[in-house]
Amino acid sequence: MSGVPVDGIGAKKGASARFNIDDFVEYFGKGFGYTNLFVCYINFDKVTNGIRSLKTETDKTSPGIALACQSVALPGKALITKERFTQAVPKQFGYNIQYSDITCNFIVDANISGKNTWNFFNTWSDMIVNPSTGFVAYHDDYSCDMYLSMMDHDNSITNPALGSKTEGGNKIIGIVCEKVFPKAIGEISLDAGSADIGKFSVTFASHKFFSVKNNWTAEGASRSTNFDAFDFTTLPKNEFAKLQEQQDELAFSTIGTDTGLVTS
Image (cartoon, rainbow, N blue to C red; front, top):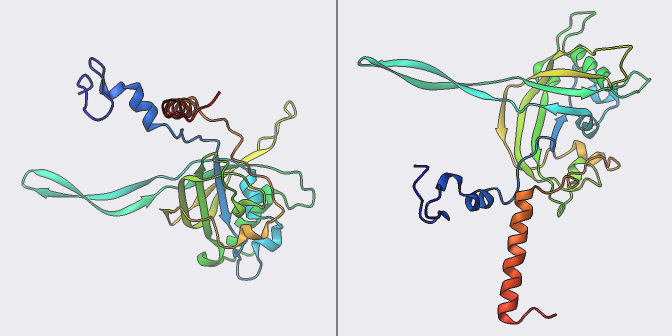
């Protein structure tokens, strides 16, 4: 098929429709999804162990934790199947869904009061299972929703959900992971011969996730009106998007010249 032109898709004689540059530019004309434009928003305002509130104990905000997140892998899912034998050939049927864990990497802030990023997740873990008394909290109390989004750099909008001056940020991919809680906190490597920023990983368990396009949360972030950290407009447009814009400008200029709308 790669050597056969396809009508209506800009195919050219003697050219491969599969590798037609015009089709490629048209398909990716709006750009690509970049892995460095993302938000990991944990809506932990109501997390508690029935006695203490995580937000009160740690003095952290959801936008602040989102800023500390340096990387995250969007979770995967797989259908659980069973085989049914029809005649001599087995046939698989899906009957349930299995969701993978979520791993995030965070940087440590220098909060000497003990309420830093690492302390936040350590406190959350201790609220789930108290290491001193063995008290185990209720799952609905210590879990919350996590919103994971791949963003674009559209500078025509503002997004107050992440702070009063957050610029840009349409969702390319957006999912909400339900009933999330930290199940493992990774180690922090300390080295006298290095001056790197402290980082650690957190693995979250999640019940399931859904694709969403609405805002991250109806509450949490709206309280952080003085948080101005996010700006998704700084990444330059990719070369294909620039080429498409040049073609559009050329077409407009040609139309203007033909109709006498362009003046010197």
